[in-house]
Image 1 (spheres, rainbow, N blue to C red):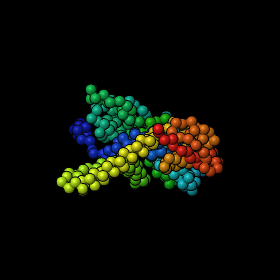
Image 2: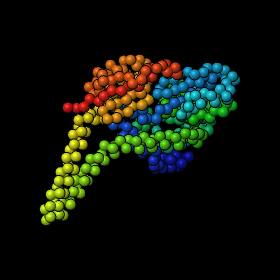
Image 3: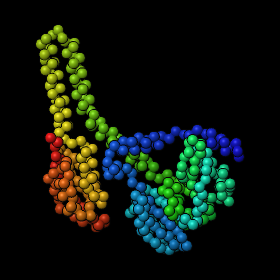
Image 4: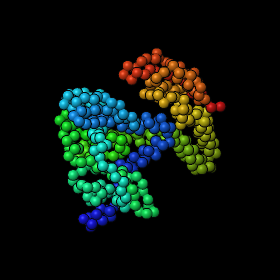
Length: 359
């Protein structure tokens, strides 16, 4: 066992392409205001199943908030009811949540090298860390603290008895539910005692596609800002090269000089126009500060010197005043009547305003 344990510690970390893409996406999103980052980031929506003493509670967990949906005897919950709930909620993950009293939590110290193969290391050490063998448990661990100078780290180990978990899984299987995650009440969001090989791989393509689209969209924003300036610079360089080649032909030189001057003037005009309009990042920051946290935007469009906002708010009537009080927007007004959304209980609005040009 010792040689196998050392082999796990010495094995090099694997290349994580998805981790690199996630780092790249997060770096690009970090340049945007918090509210815009929230709109672009993928929002997790969990449907949580809690089984206790013959009863089952179904809850929605999103953005750290939990809302109870149903609470009834387990025997009364049929597949059709669950199927309708899945179609309505459209969860990104199905979660089996067990009582905290069923779990054993322990803070343990491990070598820092164990981080690359944490589950395998814990499996070898389980009979030392707990009264049970790893084959009789579902478990996961969360790194609490790394101490590089001491070459060690502290992790929180969470274990659940396999018999109790399997019984709950069988109850869910009876209503055609296979969870993506198993955790306990009050646990950290990243805890999942379900072994990786037993986790269903649903929605992987759509999540990856969303990440790729976000990166492409941000890349297009950057390109849209840089391409016009690059084109003007390239044109000026090309014209200058032609002028140098035709120095002895004064007539053609003058004509080319005139073309180059026009290109430079166009470049200056574009630069002045860009300087007269507030940068897009400033407009987004001004809207983020002005709008209350309760406002939910479905669409935000900038066109010429106007901005249009479509969304929902608890009280849409106050938005005109909030927009008018900003430094970068004026003449705010609703372009269509405000209506009530029965599903969310909020007021739906379509509002437009003019962008104030910088002097």
